Each structure stands twice: as C-alpha cells, then as structure tokens.
Image (cartoon, rainbow, N blue to C red; front, side, top):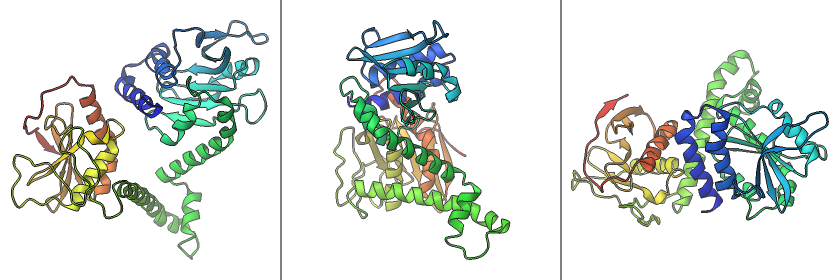
Length: 383
C-alpha cells in the first residue's frame, strides 16, 4: 500500500475504536504505535529503529522520558510525545519535547493525541524547537496535500533535508488554511467587514453587519460546494459529463456519454434517471470514497427512489435519494439498517450529513462478509 492507503486504514481504525480508548497508554498502543509502524514503516519492536521511553538527562532534569524516539541510520531523528485521545494538544504540555530537542540530534518533534499529529522543527532558532508546528495531520479529516511531506519521514523514503527546506512554507500555508477554515465556519466581524465593503458602498454599521453576517456564511458554503462539484465534474470528464454508475463491485467507472444505472427489481419501462439524482450520487460517492475505493460505490434507480449501495448489494444501503417528488428527502441508515428520511432542499445539503454516510460505510467494511445481493426493504422513518 502507498502512504495514502496506509493513512486511510489508520483513520478508519481511529474512527472505529476511539470511543473505547480512555487512557494515554491505550492511545499509544491503539493508535500511535500503528502510526509509527504502519504509516511511517518503522519496526516498533526493534530498538534499533524505535526506542520507547527514551531517556536523555537534561541539566538538572534526570530520568525524564520521551514516549518514542525514531532512529534512522543509527541516529535519533524524530521524537514523539503522546497524550490521551481527544485531549487538546497544547504546546505547554510538551516540555519534554522542548528539552530533548536541544540535547539530541533530532530535528523533528511530534506531539500527538493519536488522532492529530503536530510536527515541529527549529525554523525560528537553531536547536530550539519552534512554538508552532510546521505540519498538522488530522486523521479525522486527512489533508491529502500533506501526505507527500509525511512520506519524507517514512523509513523507505526518509529525506530530512527536504522536510526542513519545505517546513517554512508548510508552516505558514497550514496556519493560513486553518484561519480560512475558521472564518468559513464562523466568520469574525473583520472578515465580514472585509468582504462586505467590497460589495456594499454604504457605511459598515451594526445593522449592515447583522444583515451581511448570514450572507457571508451562506455565500461561503455555496462557494465551497460549487468548487467541490466543479472538481467532481472535471474528474468525470468535463462540465457536461455524466457518471457511469457501477453495476457491481470492480466495474469500470470510466465516464461514458450516457449514464448507466443498474436495473432494480421494481424498475419500470418509463423510469427516467435525472441529472439531479446522478449529481446526488456523485456527492455521496465523493463523501464516502475515503472509506472504500470509488469503484465499490454503485447505484440503482427505482420508480420511487435512487439508491446508493456498497458493492451493488441491497444489504449494504448507503443512501436513498427521494427526489421524484415535490419535497426531496435524503434517506440514511442506522446500525440496524433502518432508514430515516431527512428533508433537504438541494443536493448540496447532502454534505451536511457526510459523517453519517461515512459511518454507514465504515460499519459495512468492519462487518463480517454477508451473502450476495438479496432484495430487502429496510424500515423507513422520517426525520
């Protein structure tokens, strides 16, 4: 597996087990050691590669330990300090990292709670760990643009010089992206004013702020959704492309001129698959393709709804798009495969239920194999 596949495998494990982890030691065993071994490729049971409870006396501090030291070419290169899952990562909690960074050969320090990994180096002053990370990897929402940089710390592709040279740019790009994300989620007054004054010529009064605050939030959400949809359309062959819907696991998903939708037992001759249904399918597939390959996401159109399935199996429903009516609904499923219909006004609203859709697919992936397609109708309720 490449690093993206290894990272996604760990992300799935974290989502599946994090609620059952209650201690720092359990966090290290369940998530941090697999990160070092599976993602970075070091043998956690070989002291020549990974030293647990690493000790280096620092001044008057004697016997202090760092959780893990990663060794490459006989030298300690990376220090790792772990906290309990879900604990906030604060730099003041990493005093050992600061002290050990100054007295070892390590140029990289990692502070983690098993899900979020913060990577530090010494950009601001030589041999002194920076107060801010140059790279933050969150396994609840992996930023794939960072994976090539993470790959440079793996055993097989270790390239410290390249990491350090890119760290300065990564540090500021990462901080800017996090600031933008925060503004998009809950815009501050300055951000609202910055945008409002470019479209509104009057004075920026409190009344104007109250009027434009919701407009900025709405415009931001619509902009992001449009960007995602544009990327999907381009990936499918252009702005006017249709998606070729899989009729089974492993089916070729190369875009075709006309949509191909698997027949369903209650399909009728006059059934028409609409572009809105196909767009909803594309959105669902984009949401869950981090859990499974996109080729495993199939679809079946029926007279009453458009179904999205895992492995083209009716026993693995991911979502139902109830679009053939004046009021639209998104059908989602719980652990008992009982369906709940959620009213939506647009296809873009499917994104607001992304976590539920991912959890549904994750349950199917973690469950024992079940028999091939058997038509069954899960119970249905309305939200």
